[in-house]
Image (cartoon, rainbow, N blue to C red; front, top):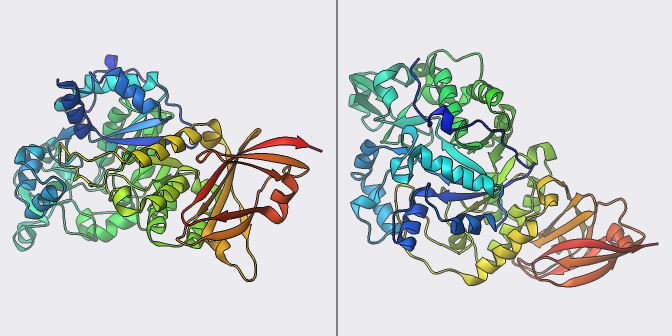
Length: 511
């Protein structure tokens, strides 16, 4: 079987066992754009091999456990040419970048020609340097994997056409937007079943004999270079979904699941390597059962944007074994910028929510500065935007507050909150606590545009019999409260719209 050359020679890529906290924080960076801006900043070409130490230090100062370098793989010249003929994409490019030029389209990072680090970014050796810089600062590295499709000029198209969904000339004639001829074979273009096909990629056949072993070899090559991967649209490869999408064109359904085979094989050779699923359609639990360490929590994002506090609380009532394997976010490269989606007060409440829940806490480069333009992933540069100093100051306090072991490996619990017969505004509040040894934190957030009052009971068996010192990690306010009251009837809380408390709770004495 032909292997996909996807990594540097073994002697330059020693195998290491990745170590992760239970609930890591991850920082996503658009690699191409970031390096372009660093090159402008320093007046010379900056690649992954030559990023100044001060830039790595600035990232490390936030306390992240990992950096996701989005878009490092070799991009497709054929994909770039197709995109530059797509008027819808061109309009999107000009919306984000009014002075767009054709050379700004550097290709989609999800139209992968080869799983080799793009030479423009520094190649495999540059990535190895970047990984070492991250490791020296206590951070892991996450990269991308796109299981559903590859670029139309990927080597497999000529070498292994049997890896793809194929069809016939009638389909190509009747539906040229979904089928294309390459190397004398009719291939299906890659797709999500609910949207038109993507014109620049070809659909891999998850049922094809031989493909899974080729994927295992490819992902193993990636695992030599990083500590985890984010798998694009991972649910598309589930047997049931794939069968519904492609029917008889896919052939006989295998007896095993794609992800069971791939993940188990890779983890045998790379213990500690983590798999993160981009997933929708309420299939998070299913993919967790297939071996994924973490799955996107798009439902939380949607509820934070559109729903009420009570429905958010109900979402958080799921078992901790499930909650702790979710990826919490309020923006990433697929979503609009948080600053463009939420008013600042609501954004802060939403950020505090996603940041203090179990699971991965995913942040996006530009989120802290208040960037508002969602950049199409094809573009190699972005418009200048002013820094929102107030928002940036909030995030610095928030990231500092959660940069503690209790939020990485502690015990998380929802708190009961109650109201009164003539005052049901307590339903606008959500509350939870973190415990690790003597460390105690209590988070209470008003997720509404109305004032709210409540009693919040801490779930600590030893809370009573003394006084507690409550230090708000964001505002700096200090309160003293009796432990007996905090246990029952509960800490009295009154919060303005979108306001919150982030209490570090210190016992003062115990009688």
